[in-house]
Every structure is written in C-alpha cells, then in structure tokens.
Image (cartoon, rainbow, N blue to C red; front, top):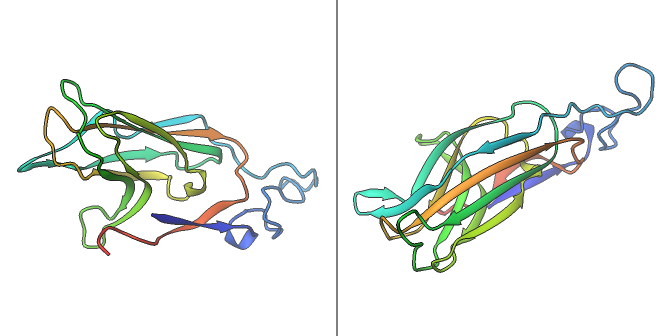
Length: 193
C-alpha cells in the first residue's frame, strides 16, 4: 500500500504563504484582500487506462501483469478525483474460478533496476463474477500529473478464454482542493519484502 502524507501549512504546499493551511490568502494576489481562492481549477477530465484488458496466464504467454502509459492533467486543481476499477469476464470466456489477489499501481522507473510501484489499490477478485469499485484518490494528486506508467497485476493461473477483463478510469472534478492533500507519497510495503 501507500501512505499519503498530509500537508497543512504553506511550507508543505497550501500555496498562499500565510501558514494557515487553507486554500485562500489574505487576498487573491491583486492586493485587494477579498479572500478569493488562489487555486486554478483544472478542466473536467476523464483518463482511461485499461479498457477491457485481458489479464491471464498461459505458460510462456504470461499476461498476469500488464502495463499501460497514460497522461494525467499536468496542471489545474481538482476538488475530487475518483478512480473507477472494474473487473469483468473476458468476451467468449468466463471469469477465473478462484479468488485471486491483485493490485493497480503507478510504476516509477519502469523496466529499470530502480523500478518502484506505488499501489493505488489492492483487491481480491470474486469467484467467477465481475466486480466494480469507485475509490477516492484526490489526496494522491501529486502522483497523478503528466505521463505515467500504470500496472495491473492479478495472480491468476488460468488462460484464454478465461481470466479477467480489467477496465480503469480516473475522473477529475475541477474545483477548490481540500487543504488535506498529500505532500508526498511514500511506499510502506511491496510484494518483494
């Protein structure tokens, strides 16, 4: 999993310089002291990552772990970011018969010795049924900027036509960010420990 370290002062990122942890300053930067927000809202954005991606295992064709490149909004502030994860049965086949552990994460330095996974969510698959969950990831906004590599892993041992079809989307709702955001995301655990 990952830990989102909160920030509540200007030094750690509320951006208005008054040290009170809110998203407004004594003014809006124009010297009139009206207390208006200092944030710049982003645009309504939906980022699709995996779209019905078939996750399976078939001997030398190991697709239990699949990477995809995505691009998140580089700038703009968001009141809420929702990560939607959906598992379904692949076309022409059934879902895996067993419950399997899985996760979706951001891969830093993919394919290098310094590769690091920052999990967005960890889950167990249901027995032969689809499943969907919406997860609030607003506090992880520092990670969700620019080009990123995402990875899905499901510890399945079945091959086509069975397995799992994975779909994920990130929905960005513009607006005033909470003053309870992550200044940094620190991995506390990985599957290699």
